[in-house]
Image (cartoon, rainbow, N blue to C red; front, side, top):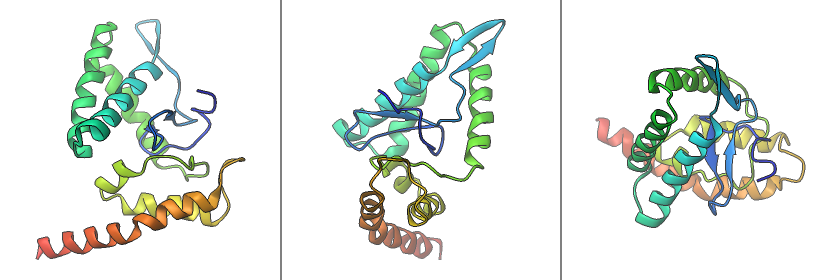
Length: 169
């Protein structure tokens, strides 16, 4: 899994379109300290992303449902490791905010965008598109391929936004 921690990943972690790579944000600390112990957090994030991706791809679950189930699996694994969920979740939330406020400079070309589309995170998708437009992609990443993937979903995103506005009226 070389390079799985070499990118900027919104919301800490994500997965490739084919599900073969789990990405963890390059700024996310790989461990947390709890009661004098160093706890490897990557394994919990990987578990979450694997469960989520499998539920979406194999059972055709909507992202939000898959995410909720994956979070419960993650919580069970954290507790089984002898870590209080509250401590783990506080650590993750601190890093989500810190990482979420940074500019996205290195987004993997094959990052699965379904979670961001399902969450209607248009601002995030636009920032990813801006990253590509300014040429700020990791070495070896085909910016044109990322742009095509983003462009392919623009009509769907635009329609969902219009639908949301109609429902609010």
